[in-house]
Image 1 (cartoon, one colour):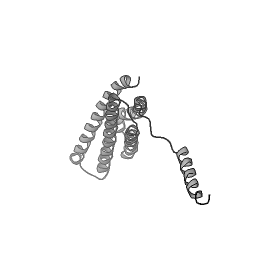
Image 2 (spheres, one colour):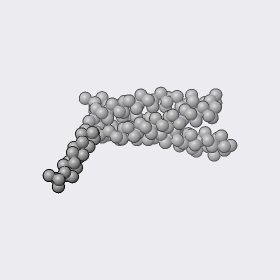
Image 3 (cartoon, one colour):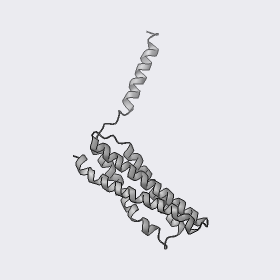
Image 4 (cartoon, one colour):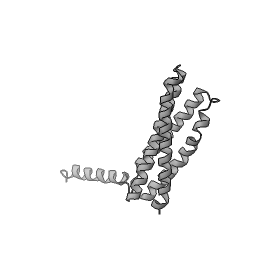
Length: 158
């Protein structure tokens, strides 16, 4: 019995560990659609407010706070959507489009942060404009991808 004790303790520990460890995530298109919807509701108002929050009446520090929040939501949304597991080809397409969209929003925000920091550092408009143009392109691409993903949701979440 004493020889078997380490084996019994090991089996008991493995059983206890298995009881508290969650199982593998189940593939589910509805979960993908729910995640995309949740994060879309968080990013959309911020994306729509970009031009207002970056207007001449906004201070650079106010713009930075807003852009940091926008970038954070974009990156968190991309990570959350990436962690979902689709069960069909349409679900996979929805996940890919939405994830790319949120990555583009996050990258756009990061570029706009850089542009504001460049302006605060005294860089000229000519030096900052290419960064802003790249950020705008990423934001527009992200918006287009999110619209395409939104059109897929009703066909996936059945």
